Figure 1 (cartoon, rainbow, N blue to C red):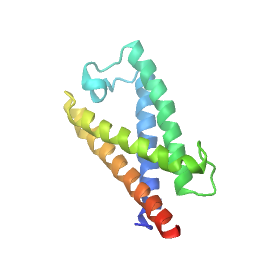
Figure 2: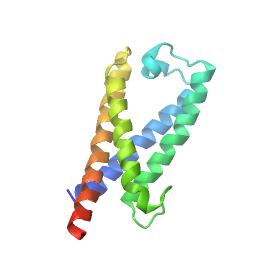
Figure 3: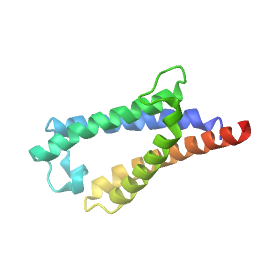
Figure 4: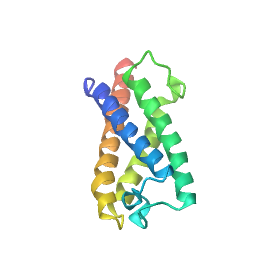
Length: 139
């Protein structure tokens, strides 16, 4: 599990960068709305474009968090002592995202974002269990 944690962090970074790009594109008006928000419309209405802009910022912070786990010398967006709490919050968020994407009315949203959410969930869990394992071995 120890060797998997950095790989999991890098996989999460790559997937989150893709997600940030997708959200930025939606916010900019690219007609990819069929793959988001239940797929109601190809081009998002203004409030959903704003939501995508906010989501892009949030996901960029999450990508930075995972990058700081992949590169320990890099300062992260939260103190190291908060990492386990942030990871558990992300586990919950990714679990909810996996479920919500899995029941989306949009076939393309289900096909793309359910697996992405599930892989992000797996990455977060690998890192959580690595941290838990390291703390029990140390203490």
